[in-house]
Length: 203
Ligand SMILES: N[C@@H](CCC(=O)N[C@@H](CS)C(=O)NCC(=O)O)C(=O)O
Image (cartoon, rainbow, N blue to C red; front, side):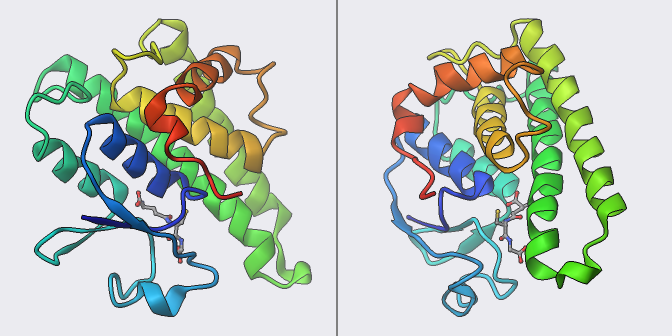
């Protein structure tokens, strides 16, 4: 099994943490979409990461679809129940964070990919507003105690903690520990866990 991508990407990192959590062995090819697009294309012609190359050579894309497969291959896993309200709530927390991350990545790309005179501040402001709304929803989940950030954690803890670290670094004006103390505390607990320690962002 080969995971393609850098842990600087929260999407790659949440796959890596999940695989470590369930004890799945894998190798990693640390390729950057910015610098190594041509090397990524044989795995995914759209040049996006993460990609998980299965032992039979199949290339899986999209972190949610990859994690679904990883968990299906992990009998007895406790990160995501097979059915019921608990599963639904975990998937919703993951969805709120992955949506927020999509917006955070867009906000990061906007000034990098466009000439300075074409960067549209109202668009960026809209992205920040959406990210902020996502974090408010997730802080409420954390306040309820649904994100323990310990060895009883679920896929929601992993995704929210990985996402928080990325957003906190890339848009710190929105994601401060003062505004979101429960998310910041969750991150602190999770980052100390072995599966998180094993997946350190490259930058
Ligand atoms: N929805 C995707 C998002 C993946 C994503 O946005 N990856 C970024 C890196 S953080 C990427 O490949 N960007 C290159 C591009 O969009 O061209 C997932 O969950 O895997």
